Amino acid sequence: MLASTLQIMDFGENLIFAESTINTALGQLSELTDLRYDQSNFMSETGIPVEIGNLKKLEVYVASQTLYRGALNGAAFPSDMTALSTLGFFLFGHLIQSVLS
Image (cartoon, rainbow, N blue to C red):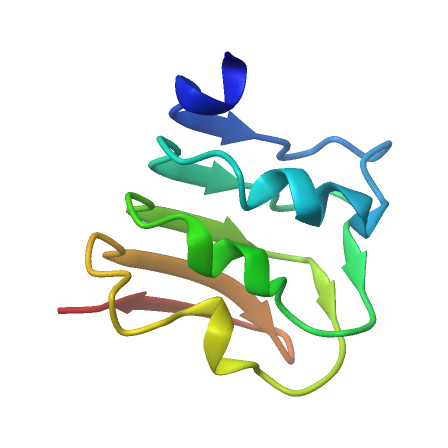
């Protein structure tokens, strides 16, 4: 039930959140429009979770001060993910804010 209704998920400033095991469930949140886990302790040794690519209604994705390692996999941001308008990352000490069209 929650997976089909949840629209906003904010783990920001939650230092307990440090496991990448949420990725599988993340891709099932079909109504999610806003995902934020900035300043969380989130880490991923395999890069940005490809499950994010399943979130076709996602408009905002903010992951500042999140540790991603590995190459960027195109499956994380497929071309049919057209609602996405804001990305926020902290990369090499510089905030990158992108607006996609």
